[in-house]
Amino acid sequence: MKPIFVTRSSMPPFEEYIDAIRGLWESRWLTNAGSINEELTINLKGYLGAENFLLFSNGHMALELCIQALGLKGEAITTPFTFVSTTQAIVRNGLTPVFCDIDSTRFTIDPDKIEPLITENTSSIVAVHVYGIPCDTDAIEKIAAKYGLKVIYDAAHSFGVSYHKKSIAQYGDISTFSFHATKVFHTAEGGGAAFKDKHLYDRLRHLRDFGLCPGGLDADEIGANAKLSEFHSAMGLCNLRYISKEILKRKVISEHYDKRFKTFKGLQLFPDISGVKRNYAYYPVVFFDEFGKTRDEIIESLKKHDISARKYFYPLTNEFSCYKNVFCSAETPIARDIANRVLCLPLYADMTEDEIDVVCNIILKS
Ligand code: T4K
Image (cartoon, rainbow, N blue to C red; front, side, top):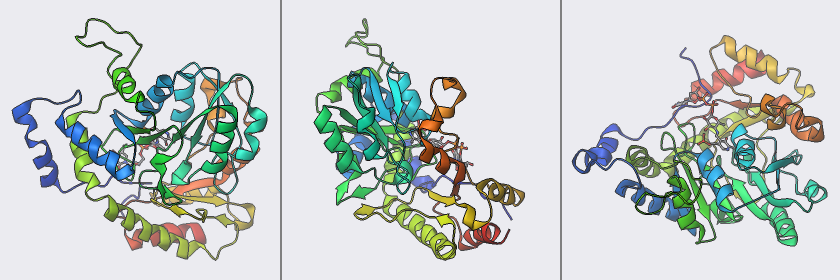
């Protein structure tokens, strides 16, 4: 049996990609907002129903530069149950992350716990639609309006998700996406930001290009290099043509897993939240004591068969050693408990039924 990885990048037909990049040998315009980049920007803006949209070199830089563009200061209320990028983007902007516990069903920031964390220094809420599960956007945005806070959603996992018939990209002030190779839609490396305020457009383009002024002789902002190349953009153009098929294939696999697991006690599967159109980005399972085996025992059994499931997201970001003695995960006990129990099972578009059954059999019988 071949190794089974937690995910596997989907690829467009080879010839289609070659066709998309062929013109680059003539134009020699390989990056710095070239024509393929512009075309992908328009296509993604349409697909996501975004008022404004820009591409970035990766999801992390999209988030980091969006926080910078909003000029946020002070404290950002956020979740520790996420990939380290979310917290790093906050801290690298000089903001203090204030960790809020998560809801035990959605695994996203618990709105009931936000208000007690608000101080006169709070400027924003940086929430994550983890695994593509929408946050309780109504509740979050009500609180934000009451206190005049900006809302940024790290929507890295949420490409193609809609909530209450509205694209996930239309919530909050800004939503940022990852187009990394491991994502439902990818550009190999890449990211994007959807945002409501059109004034951010020029500012983000500027920050994405070193903060350089026209002519390149001055920089009036401390920017970064976060542009997406034409090769990456071409991968996106091709992959976007297949996004519905990609999501459908993942749905079939997820439903096969559901069928195998749903009668077993002690397993918490993907939440059934009304109004959510899913993208099937991840297949997280939470293993409770009643199941009889711990998450870590299951990882070991899978490993023996060359299957790599991943502990997304353990440890919590407030436990990372770069924040040693700064934050305390005891303040977010639900997040800590879920992080100790959750496992993301292999999921990718061309996963076979046999492969799913091998994974399930090991988990259920080991
Ligand atoms: N916010 C959140 C909430 C995020 O989850 C992320 C990224 C970000 C922000 C930042 O977005 P980016 O700056 O990354 O665009 C992966 C990804 O690198 C990362 O994008 C992702 N989240 C995170 C959750 O997972 P690893 O370290 O687990 O990936 P890796 O290299 O171990 O790959 C996992 C499996 O995927 C491999 O075993 C095989 C498969 N794979 C991997 C690569 C790199 C492929 O099939 N093709 C590939 O090219 O981090």
